[in-house]
Length: 291
Image (cartoon, rainbow, N blue to C red; front, side, top):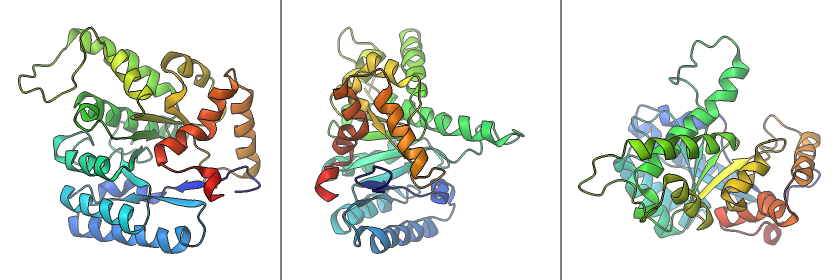
């Protein structure tokens, strides 16, 4: 990490990105507890530069709330990872609202992570890079739309939700498509269950407001040509660099990606926000204090 230029790292799983597909509720509960305690034992208690994002058994929302509380309060995790696909409903569904409520109470973050690609129309794609390239943002877009449109940010204004490992282009697509669709397809909502716009506010305006008030975050990488434009469209507060180190990258490629961020057309203040300040706000700790 030192050679790669990384001061601190928040740990996410690999194969467990698909934990939403676990059918047995009891097994899901056991897997999440075992994973969290392993991450704590193997990494977090041995080096303060490591922080963990917990797995919580979304298959049983009450158990997920209990595991989130255990991971944050007893093990020191900074939040939990939500699967972008695999669950019986999208993550913004009412059955999962108690999880957002608990995350708000605990002051921790929730990160929606792409990476489980089956069931999205890509199962018969014969070239895997297409599956990998499209699968991450597809799942994230569904999760983002479900959380946004169901008014999660209105119901739980202290929440911080990150949408990770899908780049930034999907975010611009959602801003444009959802804004236009809302203008012509406003849902019937007599009980005020869905998103609540202020007078004269569009979906675009609403989303940018959530970004600037620290509720929406978007993971980015080096070499994304749309990053400077996205910063101009929504402001720099949302975007946070994710190295994915050491998964699929090495020290040299991470250094190269950091240099790409430093060389792109943004101000020095915007680059600092992307490289560490936004992540520090999202995860709730300062990297230099643990390095």
